[in-house]
Image (tube, rainbow, N blue to C red; front, side):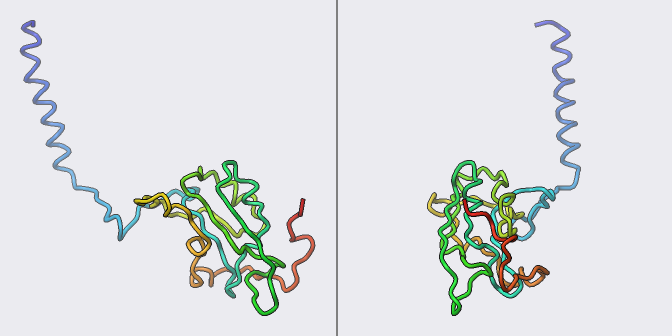
Amino acid sequence: MSIREVLEGPLYIVRALATTFKHNARPRVTIEYPERQKVVPPRHRGRHILHRYADGLEKCVGCELCAIACPVGCIVVEAAENTPERRVSPGERYAKRYEINLLRCIYCGMCEEACPYDAITMGPRYDLADDHPDKFIAVKEDLLEPLQASLGDTARPSAAPSAQAEPRKW
């Protein structure tokens, strides 16, 4: 060991302590996580949301285009026919079963790009941790936005869906 290294050792220690004390003197930036969440960028793709119209009807008509567009196949849609006494969506059909496996999802946004009715979007929620794999199967009830959130929606479902708005059936 040289004399230069012996003399520079305490200098390095003083520099390290100066850096530590400099950071200790700064105010702490703490986000109270459950109460206040971090602001996400506008194009952030978080947990999925199934939207409704202001009158409570679901925008999803069970066309399964989101499931077809999904590159990993994590979306399962089972459609059923609307009846006059039980109207769930403005179209002829509605999504009776809508499930997304959040563990398989790669959050690419292809499902929201494929949807012709803007029924599904990727929301701002990023808190997706849980303790059991079964809790990562998001069912329709988990994905539907609350009715209060959809009251500001200005879109109105048409009484009779036009042939132009109806998705293609391959």
